[in-house]
Image (cartoon, rainbow, N blue to C red; front, top):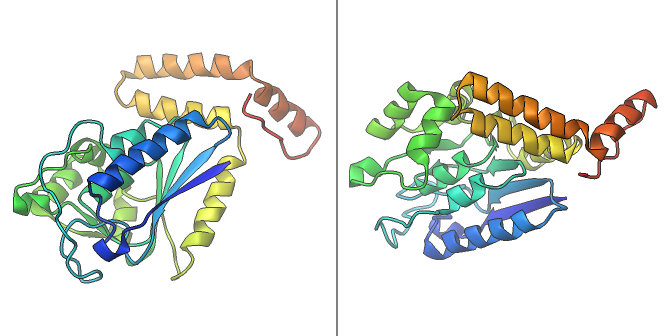
Length: 246
């Protein structure tokens, strides 16, 4: 029901190299083919989520290759998933790591986490959707600030500007907070969740009139599903619904 994907290169700050990028794309392909899954949780091992340069927490992360990456990166693959993606940020996320986090639908982080794009100091521009997804989340003013100055944003600032949705209040509470949020998401109709993700995602690139038409069309389709019937029946019978994704 829930797929957990874990970045596991803690000795290199979970930096996304070519091999990891390929593995993430392949995992996303497998997830897309599994109709039983309702949610993806993306997290990492160690004290950072994924960093691309020197960090006090991990020493110096290794820059295996700063050459331009080909289209169809791991963030694009993650963003293309039809089911919701919850990103559990166990620490700092910078560069490609932050781009990957931005591709999720919801982000929850520890209070010590920091976020930023520092690549312009090395002449490196985000290459996996960072320049497009960041302003859609935080607005163009904050996006330009972070991109042009390399500004690092802490957890509370990230929460205030909409970069993350939740900040855990105590160390070690991330797993519990993720479980609570995952239960809330998977407790609803999986079809409705996919449609909600689709309408929000596509609606950003549509006019209001077109977005409203998309919303109406998907609502018509939703009314004909088994899950919709179950939702009404469970409400009348005053019990929890048992959604099947049909």
